[in-house]
Image 1 (cartoon, one colour):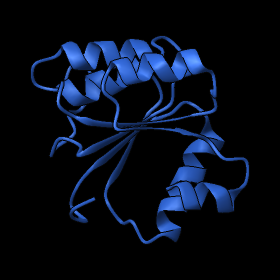
Image 2 (cartoon, rainbow, N blue to C red; image 1 turned 90 degrees about the horizontal axis):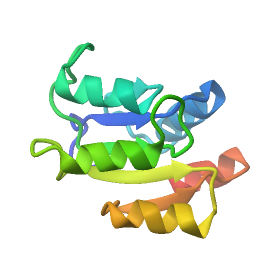
Image 3 (spheres, rainbow, N blue to C red; image 1 turned 135 degrees about the horizontal axis):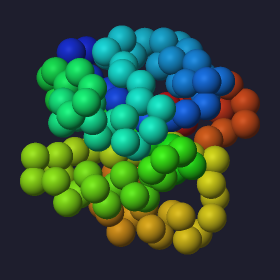
Image 4 (tube, one colour; image 1 turned 60 degrees about the vertical axis):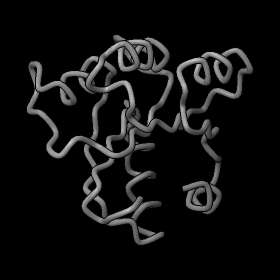
Length: 128
């Protein structure tokens, strides 16, 4: 992140994974504002100010899980990249899926990176 004012949006439905990301960011001294959306629908609403309070300033980075209720991560990426105002946002996929098809689908939507969630907190902190 370029500045501690840059906003991060975490799109994750698992409570434990949300807390793990928060702890890992704190451990590596990342103090950027962190917003959490539990579904792709909620994340798009927060980015657009459509049915949810709009995130201001617009996030500099989205950390995206692929396995989400209501709207999966790939569908979220399709919507994000189709939106003129949001299409250039930086996205890092942070998921438990190590499936080559999921990785390929994510990179079709120009994600910046694809990280498979590590199993231990130390590995997770290192990945962050």
